[in-house]
Length: 83
Image 1 (cartoon, rainbow, N blue to C red):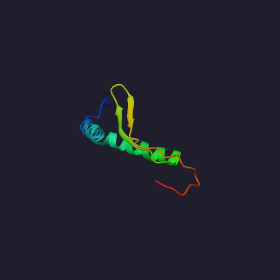
Image 2 (tube, helix red, strand yellow):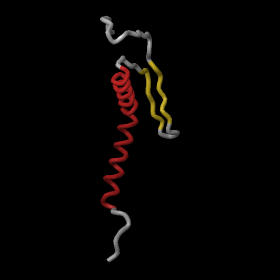
Image 3 (cartoon, rainbow, N blue to C red):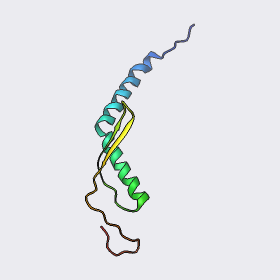
Image 4 (cartoon, rainbow, N blue to C red):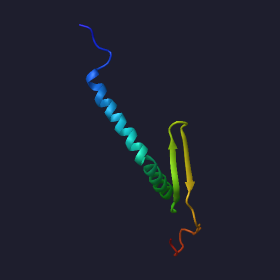
């Protein structure tokens, strides 16, 4: 008995899973990326980080983002004023 190279019963579920994964990423990936960059930047810097847009281009493997900064406050760690 010869062993098969592909398990054909697994190809259809795998293809459906990949289509679902790509569709989910294309709809929500940029939003999740922006939220992750904002949360990570805020945790690392200790100041609020805002982005207008974050986009991960899979065709050319580029990460583009636009800062959404409208005003900047430089405060010391012991300042009473908080934004």
